[in-house]
Length: 191
Image (cartoon, rainbow, N blue to C red; front, side, top):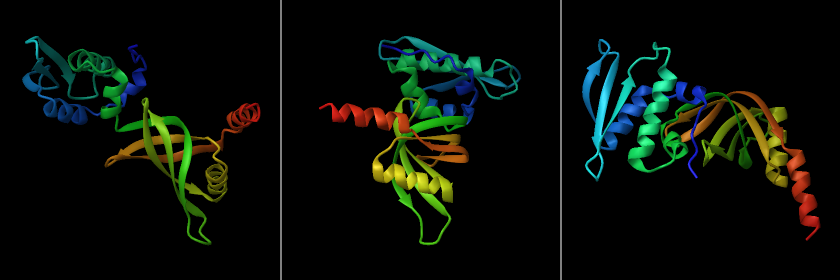
């Protein structure tokens, strides 16, 4: 089953420099510049000899920037025979105001400190990733409970890729997903 991504906010978040590096790494080359050097045509030939092209905006000033990025991902889907979600997971470097669900896998807090470094596993564009988040005392206590009792959590904020890892910044919410934990517990008691 192929999933078509329609969320323009996802495409709006794509950094053209990341896409250019991705295209270069995967055998594409810039053919020509368009719109007074505000866009570029990239081309690639697949194994069957078919030529594909991507019209890539080089600036976010175009109103249709998200739509053109969506077209680029669709073309990559065709040429690479990979899903849009797989491709996006390679291209996304930030997602503003997003919510991630997952499990806490590590809590680092020095004795007496009111801030903790927390690592959680969650899905970012359909791919399981480690996500780091800095939490203050109340949320840190929730993270410790989630870790000890294996309770799933939600965390909202701005997700940013730093190196090969994701970091949740400007945390707006960290909460236990107690309903799911109760449902799991009830299901286990039936066995």
